[in-house]
Image 1 (tube, rainbow, N blue to C red):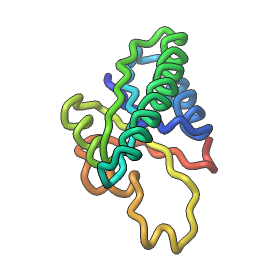
Image 2 (spheres, rainbow, N blue to C red):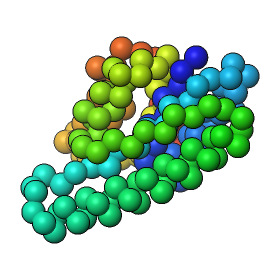
Image 3 (cartoon, rainbow, N blue to C red):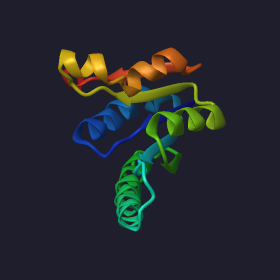
Length: 139
């Protein structure tokens, strides 16, 4: 079984990793840990430096999370993607073909939900695999 965890480095993301391990460890899954470093929209020199720093931070966060998964005796494939999160997650799903994808859902106001399409909502519509969505209230 392949389980892809979309990890953003947040406390909620850390809890989702732990809960996923708790739920699936008995079947010895291959864990795909995906972190996306978002690129700025314009390509100025200042934004290039910011992007490099964001990538460096994302790499460190991903490495620490992968080490945590490995401590549980599970195989982990840590992937750092750079680009637009929704596209990068869908690209990784299409390339790695996981059995299940784990994402977190942040608590948002009704106005925010109306104007901003969430990652979890995007995956519900477009991903051709099972989804496990953790919100702050169930972790």
